[in-house]
Each structure stands twice: as structure tokens, then as C-alpha cells.
Length: 459
Ligand SMILES: [Zn+2]
Image (cartoon, rainbow, N blue to C red):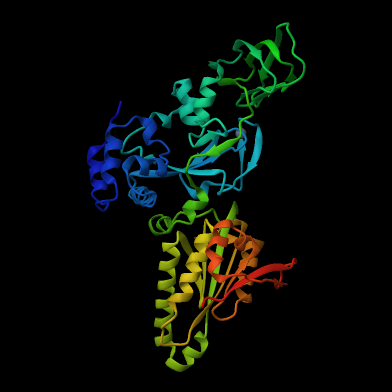
């Protein structure tokens, strides 16, 4: 049943600017299957709507702010591909999560493990996924449990489709219930299931063996290694609750690739996120790990003398205008301004090359000003924590300290890069016009190891 609250839908759509693909969103809400409105991948939506991805992301973020859709942060296990949990609030994320399918605790990683999708708001249209326990089993596993953004490396197919073709047992076992399948196992196969694992290895056996896997409420036991050949495999539910069971036999170990998707990290580095959903923050006192984030620090050199010469009010106007212009450059290169402190600015990017592009543009922006101002910029990339400082998304960790200290290596007009930034292939390409840049070694205050720093002196 597709019951759409059309009055509410139209009221909210009317608040979106024209030309943002809102027509395509209306069509989808009115006509598409629930699957298409559940954890919408903005890149897939953009492709279908024939609009650039940035525009689709802006549309969906604005639609989230209006309550037309909801941002869904899914914690997808990189071990098995299942969505272990999903949250409608960033503040509901913790630094670790539990994958019941793998029976393992995993570190939350905004860069790799958190997939952001957009789900239509239940007041606009109720989706069957709101009640996963009543889904058809096929839909439960392949539409709801497993991420649809994962590809099987080397196979060119989605994990959900791959597992579907290799499924032997798909059933819901009542407490005490049992299901059986006869299979001929081949060397190297992986017999998998949420909460179970068998590895097929050794010399081939011709007799049919019986293997029983028993679910004890947490995982299937045992997790044996068995030889290739025929096997009668059964699964039994010894827990007190009904258990959806999926048992698949795949001829290869599955390594994952991903379709273009909006990671939690990428979303936090999106200016539109801060603009439209700026109240979304990490829970105070919690640090959510993220990988390979790039931070840029800039400081205005020569400003103190200007305060003396032209007075506080005029200097303040000048510095404010400077920050506005820097913020535009950060946004233009797919980054966000995290904060400004005095004459300094901190910005965050998903890709080091974007940060370098923004930095080079920033230097140019001061050329032609009547006052003798220049920038000192430092850029570093690495792993850090996303935290809540003064009710805003901020970053914490030694990587942040290194980024700030590298900035202090810069003299007026310099952009200083750490080796981690400099060595990125896209950055190396950008740096070609600078010729051979010598590596400098610096011992930075408060940082144990010597850092290699590359200094760009824009002409
Ligand atoms: Zn898992």
C-alpha cells in the first residue's frame, strides 16, 4: 500500500527551491516501491534524476531539515556487509558498535563504516521497513539487513545479488526449529551466514557428512573447518526467539568494493550539512573515529599591526571579510569551515587535493588588498576523532595537533604540507608547477616524531 500524505508532501516540497530535483523526489515518494525510499543513496538518486551529486545531496539535506526525509546513519560491518544498526541522529552514534552477524564488536569509522542514506519520513509515507520483523525473508536480508552499496570484488555484482544466488537456506526458525540442505562443497568455498561460519579446505571426501550448527542465542556453534565433498548441513535454533536464517555457500572469499556512497565523514565535510542540519552533533564526551580526514589551518599574518594602524572597528571588518572569502573557497573545494579562532581558521576536507586547491586559492585572494596581509597555511591528513566542542562538530587527536603545528612552520605566504598530504597522487599532480619541492624536517612542539614538511611559496 502506498499511502502518501500528499498535503504534507506538497507543503514541504513548496519550501524547496525550484530546480533542485524536487520533482524527481515527488515522483519517487508518490510512485516508487518502498525499497526506493529507504536509505536512498544520494549518488544513485542523482544519477536517476540526471542532476549533479552535489545538488542531490543539497536537496536531500534540505528535505531532511524540513522533515520530508530523515538522515539515516547506518553502521555497516566491513566483515560481513550487514547493517548492524542505524540511527536517525548523529548523537546516537557511539565509538564502537556490535555486529551480531559476526558476533564481534567493531570500531565505528565514519570514513569506512558509516553509510548515510535518506529515508522518507513516516509522516509522509509509512514504509514496510519500519517493521523489519514482518518483512518477507528475502526482503529482510537483501533489502533491509545487507547494505546495497557493496560490490563483490572481481565479480562486478552487488553483494546482495551475489548472496541471493548462492543461498541454500532462507527460513525463519521457531524456537527449537531446524532446517536442512544437501550441498556438495568445493575447496575454497566459504559457507557463511549471519552468525555462522564454515571454511572448506583439505582433501576431498566422497561420503556425505552431517554437520549441525546450533544457534545458542548469540551465534551458531561450532564454526568448523570441513573437507570438500557432499554434506548434509542443518541449522537449529536453540534460542527462545524466532530466528531469521540465511545460509549461503560462496565459491570465493568475498572482498568488498563500494558503489559511490555518502560516508559519514563526507557528510560532515559538506557545507550544506552544517547549513541545514547544524544542530546535528556528536554526543558530548564521545569521540567517533574517522580515517584519512584532511585538516587545514590558516593564520592571518600582519593583522596585529593593522589593528594599531586602522583601529579595531576597521580591522574587524577587514578580518571578517577575509574569513567570508576564505569560507567561500573552502566550500567551493568541497570542505567545511570547522571554526575560526581570532585570526585563525580551521577547515576540514575529505580529500587532500581539495584542501591544497583551497589553500592555493586563499593565497591568491590576498593579492591586491590595500593592507599588507598574508596567510600562513598548514595542511595535514590522518585519523582523528569527531567530537562535540561547544555544541558543534569538531576534531580531536594528535593528527589535529600536527596539523596546527605544521601551520606554525609556515612563514607569511607559505602553504606547508605534511608528507601524508604531499605524497597523495592527486596532490603531486597539483604541485607539478612548483617544480622540485625540498623536504624539510621539523621537530614540532609537543609532537614526538620529526615531521617531514613541504613548503609551497606561491608566486
Ligand atoms: Zn559483521
